[in-house]
Length: 171
Image 1 (cartoon, rainbow, N blue to C red):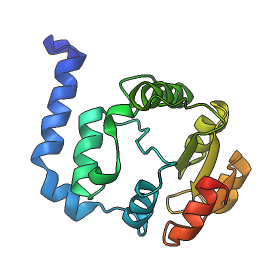
Image 2: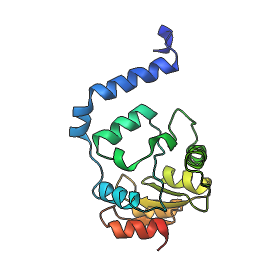
Image 3: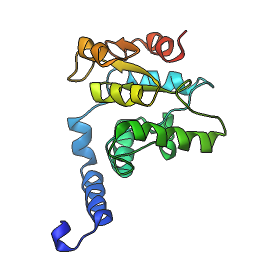
Image 4: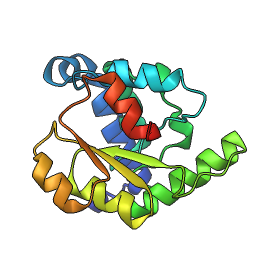
């Protein structure tokens, strides 16, 4: 695409349109992890929580995925950090913290930020940024791999909403 004179913004627009056109396919091929919607809803009901995303996806792709899987009501995507913001995930954590601080008026730093992820890369991003990391062994990574990467807490999945809340709030 770049050889045709299209700049990065055009490349991203093509990807966004592709995802938008394939919503039905995405809904059939993917899914929210079991317990994810309930966990997000429970966190949304907590005044101590501010929820967004940190992803290597582009903002519009992340929005489409969150819509397709029913996650939008619980997320403030404007304070998220995305793959077009930086290539280093730890820097994405700092970007999301900055955006959440600006939008909420509260300070988000390593003492009050929790990253929930399912890969050693997610764990590394959170620990490098000084945050606590709740790792969920629902992806390709095992609980042992996530523990070895340095996760603060490792959950087998998100089905136990109370366990998720305890992990996030240290209750």
